[in-house]
Image (cartoon, rainbow, N blue to C red; front, top):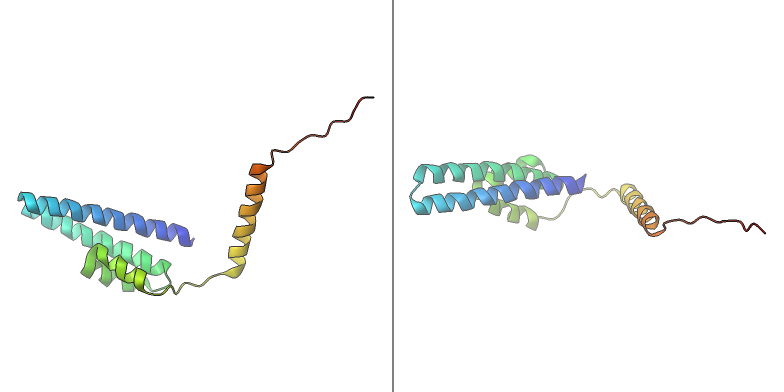
Length: 119
């Protein structure tokens, strides 16, 4: 489950980064209202991304919201600097490792059939 939350956070932060690039272009070309709207969207999406990222690293999601609103996409750098507080489930990790090994062995061994000689 950890990987899925991290991928969701990365997707949200990438979308927020795209919004800030569009906002920069709009502000440079004279579209003040569009630029401000995209900056607002960037901070909103970054707040969601930082909340999911904080939750995946073991911190409360409420910590990521003000960081995302205040710093935007750069708030994710603050969250990545913080130590990982997520609980590591040893049994789940071993089960996943064993299932990956079995899947790998099945992919390598196509199987064979022993035929008896008809002597």
